[in-house]
Image (cartoon, rainbow, N blue to C red; front, side, top):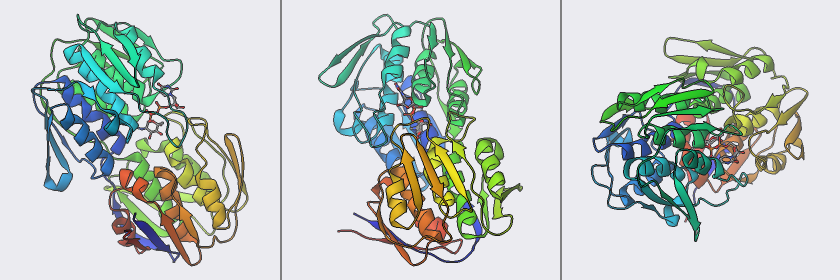
Length: 422
Ligand code: UD1
């Protein structure tokens, strides 16, 4: 298994291109199952999670052709020869559950393996299932699989989510495009990835209003047609690379970055003493002066501070002046990076969903273990600011969500290299 070796060094300087959003792409890809005509995505990120979704769609009979070195995904689901999403693929990636709504809406039946647990918490899919039931689906759980049926097609209805779920909103939104009549999604997620999905579905002929607010209304149509759609910028990759100059000094311009994607995060950066300037091509980030100050963070659904940037923000807080409190409100077990950061000399106290971080002058390099996707990149950020060498082991998590991270950081002056494993 590969590792990443980071040697702490001085200020970074230059530009980092930000890729299309992994999480948007993972919901846009299953949208191909809604139509017999081709759906083409441009600005796709080149990540192992995208390969996993490609394999899943292909296992259902969809054609997926990768063009322009992976940045264009040409998909066609003219004939589906299977409606079964197998455990072997689904267990690798929870987002696989997103094929359920589209298959059911189009053909009236689907069988999808339950994703099972995952490192950052229980993460059930009950909200996905309840939303589809509210649209008339009959569901049965058998041997770890959800067997879903809607023989006469799905029917519109009111779906009120008891808590905000990105994935459940996406599944319900896709399913509702082909349901009879109108569907209202209440307490819907407002993430930019939902807005991107709605825009793509509208290009395919769907009738949707209210995306980006907590109430989305969908008027079902008989069929959707083909479309071409660019994947929105990855706000999590953006936020991650914005933290690189915050943590080790210098000035980095993140190409394609937009404030509206990361507003709550930028507000916290500002309070910590990091400036973010909008340019014609992206966002330019630098420390305002000297050491960063400690700030408190509470993760929330969009437009709040994203849980997917909590680990990286913690890395910054490890060397900030003062004490910060980070509260994780989305996932119950998302501080696994804390003990690894402590191996590097960080002072962190975790109690339930709260981590208290007291900044130290400098972290010290150490061998550490990546426990999940965002945790692994937080250890790389910490390594950039540490004295000596940090070896981040088990980086397969990283490859799920970050495109060529060593090259992107290396190009702005970071000393970082991949060490090939056996
Ligand atoms: C998506 C993102 C993930 C991000 C998360 C929160 C993708 C592929 N992944 O995950 O990177 O961290 O949003 O911004 O887009 N829940 C239930 N029942 C359900 C579904 C969710 O209880 O049926 C709970 C979850 O356990 C969690 C909360 O709801 O505590 C929010 O999860 P959700 O928004 O659904 O996350 P994902 O869509 O899985």
